[in-house]
Length: 167
Image (cartoon, rainbow, N blue to C red; front, top):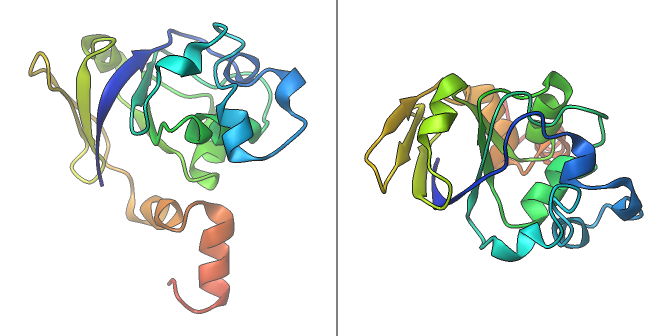
């Protein structure tokens, strides 16, 4: 898959409370959660985001609690992919389970400029800063994880499997 959007840098050690504070956990509605995405980091942060934009983060993105609301909020904000140095393990799994693309690029995240147009090619394992020409290599999304993403998350994937539509 290919994604192109404006990069929104958020820093290191962003926990799930920054992504979606507990006071907004009264729903699982993607749009409602998305309207409050990153509210724990900066009030009104989501107002800068346009559908298709890409979040760029430092190390340990998604640390903290294991709430599935965090990746749902990111998707609800219109962000289909997060590129980060690294992810907290439970967030990494929750992200894919909820249908959010997560790409680990190690120190290469620092080469992706905030506000720059970036492109992510999940099949080739390449992230490009289109404003500077910098190219960051990473692991491609494995085919079995891509199947989960294609189904919109784990629930959709299991539904397809039960219906005999997936391997």
